[in-house]
Amino acid sequence: MSELAIKIGDLSERLKVPVETIRYYEKERLLPPPRRTEGNYRVYDSAQLDRLAFIRNCRSLDMTLDEIRELLRLRDAPEEECGGVNRLIDEHIDHVQEKIAELRKLESHLQALRRRCDSARPAGECAILGDLNSTVVPAASTAGHIGLHSPSKRRRAGA
Image (cartoon, rainbow, N blue to C red; front, side):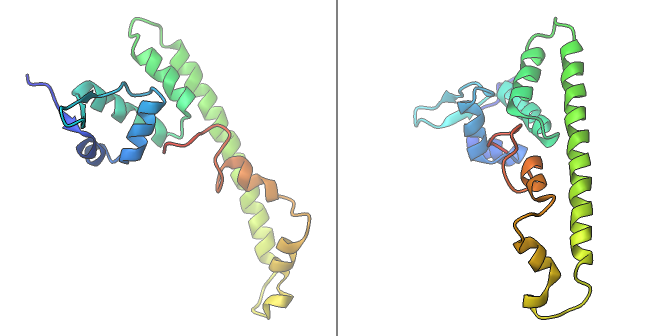
């Protein structure tokens, strides 16, 4: 069987992972450095393709890079017990449940905010805008906390 030799652009296209993200995973040492051609192009083999697919699948489950590192460590040590995998997944489930609860609170707050304005009127009289202009908005910290519009504390760059 011939060994796969694929350039970064083709790898990106095949696995639907941006080139910048692949480079980031290399920098973070999730992916080993690829072989280089005489023209200094990155060339990936089938093991790197499989590893990137694994990472992509973990990221699709919203796993952090540290969680992925641990899963890769266990994946690379097939003789080890899988209890560590189970614990990691259990912790991740707990995190997801917390995030869902926070999203429900956010939804409730948005619904309450929406009920504040029941008809079209001049923007200067809009109760929603008035509430958002207030110095105290009860759930204002929730969106940042759960990572809706800002990077989560659990997750770093590298979609």
